[in-house]
Every structure is written in structure tokens, then in C-alpha cells.
Image (cartoon, rainbow, N blue to C red; front, side, top):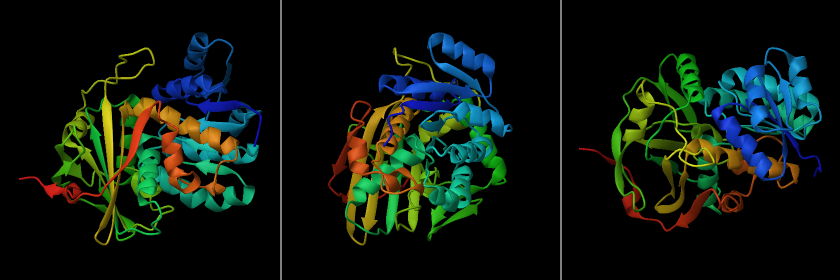
Length: 354
């Protein structure tokens, strides 16, 4: 446990980074504004007087060391994470401080587990990748839904987004991921990632009311297929996305998010419906809230708070569900999202659209 409340935020001036900075300040932390663009950092500092500005490049380890000097932890909110994650983790290991990122890139998160698990564990440093709406929230919900189950046959995570206005960072990360997999799609089946060229199926998902039954794209694969299997024995993990939101994301002219309140949140709402199955038994968890980018900030900051307070289950590289008490973590976010465990129901199995 540490009394140091200084947290470096890399990519502080980005869309999500600004939410992270605001959440840290709200919770009594002192953010250090770090990132690649000094002009944007100083512009943000004018909005947040008194905060330290530390420009740093992922290609310059010494600048990263200066950015993290004296910090108790670092949050990386700058994508593409295929470029930023490894250099920032290296810097965190040199500084001996926890690292948390909000990466939604499947391959970048695979790299983090593969390349840093042994080193971070040996150093006694906590590294939590994908501590965000995608990856972190789904993992926490699956873990909470499983409860006392040691294994499950399937985990299904259905994303009911009212819309999806992607940020510039989301588009850039998606481009990098697409290039890394040569335009192929990815799924998690039989205990491993599979790359394929199959068309995504459209199915119907019975969300809790008032959303009800909606058309979703099956195998709209998000980073939950990395975080969930990293600590849970579930050989089949499938994620779904409402077709309207998927269409927004794929359309090149969909505008970036627009703030509708004083916190900067957009009007976008979400409902995440999780179903886990073991044999004929089924368990379910649901989360509701507003703005997937805004809710990433309390997820990441709650993670930092718990790590610094010693409220963790392990060291090294670990996903949200593997390192935190999932149900307790979700309940702690009640100001930002609602969470409930639900009774099982046969109607939740996805059905092919006709």
C-alpha cells in the first residue's frame, strides 16, 4: 500500500485520456499529463491548472522514464497499443510501478500477456491490460456471473449499444489490428484464437427489457476473448454487437462522439448482457450505463486505486477478473453503471435471424 497519489496518464489529451484525468482528480489523485504531443498537453494543462506536463515519446525510453518519475502508477490511454503498450510497460518495470491500459486491440493484449507475464511477476509489478469498457468490463461480468464455478462450457457477451460514434483513436487502432491479421476475422473457439474469412452471422439476442430482442452480429470479436480465457477455464467465448452500432463503426463518415453534458459524455447508452453456461445450467450478469468511452475512466481509475491499496489477488500480468473481486469491483462503480446478476433463462440463447 502506498500513500503516493501521483498517477501518470499517457495520452492524457486524448478523448479517453481526458476522462481518465477528470476521474483521477475527482478521486483525489494527482495526474501527470504525459503524451507525444507537447502542444496538446499544454493546452490541456491550461484547462487543468497546476498539473505537471511531461512530453514523452514511445521511441525515447529516457523521456518515458522522466514522464513516470515519482509516479505511483501509470495509465496508458494512447493507442494504437500495438505501438505504445510495450514501451510503456518497459518503463513501468524500470520504475517498479503498476501499469494499467485501456487497450481494445486483441493482438496487442495477446502480446502483453505473452511477452511480459514472467518479467512482471518476477519484478512483483502489476500489469493490467484492457482495463476498459471492452476487455475489462466483459471480463468482470463473466467472472461475477460464474461465481463459484471453476469452469464453464461457454461464455457469451452481447453488447447492446444504442449507437457507436468512434473516436479517431478507435479508428486508428482498428486499422492497425486489421493490418496485423491481414484483414481476416478472429474468434475464440476450442480454447484458442482462430483467424478466418467467414462472414459474420446475424442473429437475434434477447436483451433484458426495455431493450428486448435485437439483431446482433455474432462473432463480432472484441478483446474479451483475451481477458476472459487468461484466467477462466472457458473454451468458447463469443461476443456480439448490435447491428446498428456495428454499422456506425464501419461507416467512414460516422462522426466522433459529441458531448451532451458537463462531464463530456455523449448520448450513447449501453447494455452489456453476459451469459455463461455449464452443461444445462446458465448464469447471467448485466451492466447498463452511458458512453463507452466515459465509463472506461472509472474502470481504469478504480483498478489503480485497488492496486495501490493492495486489494489485488496476484502480481504480474492479469486481467480485471483475474486480479480483482469482480462483483465487488462492479458494485463500486454504481455511480457510473448499474450491475446485476440475473436468473437463468432459456430465451437468452442467440437465434439465427430470418
